[in-house]
Image (cartoon, rainbow, N blue to C red; front, top):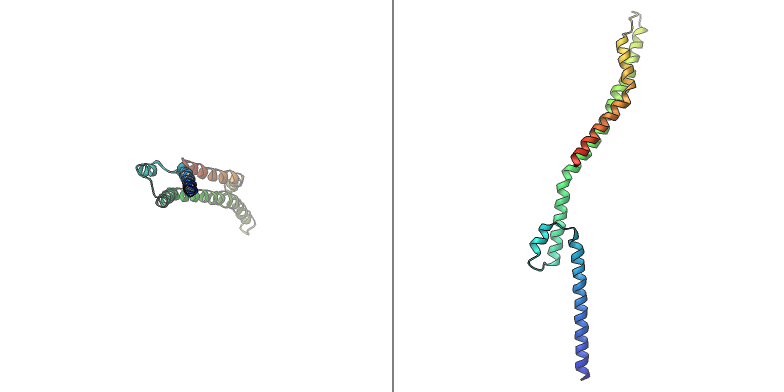
Length: 153
């Protein structure tokens, strides 16, 4: 009598242990499937999936989603880098540095033996370039940032 009672208790304990394992597996599966596309769930909804195969399928789908966004991320990164480099080039080198070099070259002409007169138009244009150097650079960067934002939408 005690033997049968021990066996029933042991069986009941094993069943409870198994039930708790199943419940934990269901919770894990629910947690895993929270962010899964509907296609994956629809394919496996008719039968109970093998957890290992299901996990591999989930990883592949996540990887595919990542790789599908990769070209867009590269384009956006290149746009940002291009905007910054072009902004510094146009604002810093062409306008600011070019304006200073233009003024200096006109002043050098004044000091030559031929005593050539300074061209006022060139000097004025160089001064305008120096004044608007920051604006040109910042507008170039802003243009590429807006272009970048357009790619993200």
